[in-house]
Image 1: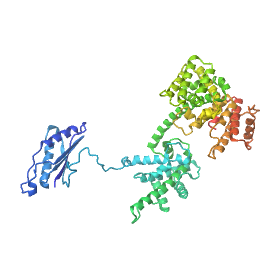
Image 2: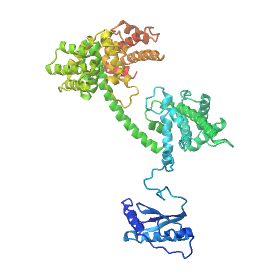
Image 3: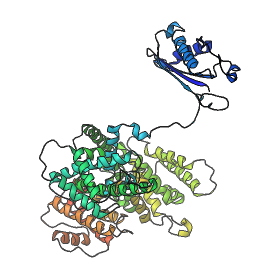
Image 4: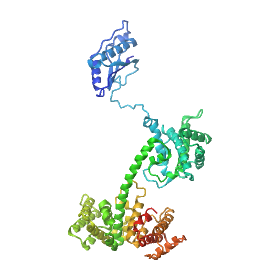
Length: 628
């Protein structure tokens, strides 16, 4: 039986990843070495074998040392040990560079069989699967615990609000993957800590919330855990608290009392049965815990950022540092989104007005907002214009350009746009990318001059004329095409982020926010136009039965806020009778008119605009429509 000899030499650390040492050791091994012989007879089958032959060897260097592995023939354990010791001495004395190294390890064991038909030892490039720990276990206890807390808290928005932003963490995903080691014990341990801290947070606020019912699992279990969590901090003295001990105690008693023990198999329980029971109980526990945590931390539902929520629940210095960083990121994000929303809503207001109320364009062009939007970011206007003309069609666009008095350069660019648009409307178009041609032509229009008010007004006039020329025959337009100016305007209002190519860092309410800012801009120009725009909002009716009541309540809030801000004592000259009637009902806190929802919303928007315009406080319109 051959013998496997393992030798490790150690010495000064080098910066060459051990390659120089490895090359020197390899040369020493390949040169050969002398070893004392044992003076005894060997068996007949061994005599035929050359006892001086090395069957295989490997050398692996690393900064500060090297490993040497050799396979010797069956010369007996004593002789193999002497040969290995001689090799170790030979290696550390072979060259001046190795004199600083010493033998750190020497091991000789029998080798049962070769690695394969050609090698006694595995080659360095072997791709065989190696035993390893799961990556989460490599994180270390502190980082894994912090990650578990982060996962649990990041799942709360999905329980607080069913319309939580896409891409967030769903509580169901956390629960479903929780039984994967080592997250099972980490999630449960950190859940206990968070429950204690959240219960203390709720107690400090002095107000309790009703149990969150969204999610899965047994509601009675969640209600029981909620009572226990609140009781765990009731009457505790201020000062230092060991939340880890309190959390462990809370969940230990809870799982014992409700038969949810999951960490260990029962006596004689088969492994498959234990795994199923363990998974089921762990998920029940986590659902109850997440619902309880969402209830206790409900006052934080409006706080953006997982780190900021975690920081509000505890006094962890690392979490506080991340929360401070997250706050800075959110401030930058909010500033960026504010600029994007301002540019998009102003651009949409201009394009909508060009389509629905073109007579107001000249008045709009005198406002500060009209000039600022193209200084801050002309991109949304570019894309709203592109979308409007695409939906209007090539023929109406050409006809509009021909009928509007335009400067020659502007006319040529818009006709180039229309020609490229025509390519997109027919099969087998010859241009490789007519959309690029369209965008280039439109960009030439918008960026042609430093003072863009003239070209912009001309483009808006073309949009309005093209919308008015849209054919109303579905046979001509094709299925799905817009058939009237109002349909075109409503489509832009329904999907402003898409048509304006608006990219927000927080797109939770992107379209809603853009629409409401657009409404405030239009209301400053004309109260009746504001009512028409509000009536085009897409969230007034739908399959969801909550939509219409929410739209009616929002309309009431518009007028209520406008009455508070305007402080008008005398009569207001309302522009429509609906606006007057609606305002009187809100002022008297009586029953609102039982009109169709679009009529109610239009009346409310018009009334709010009339009230603030009468008070000379048009600058307060965003507060009425956006924040009311």
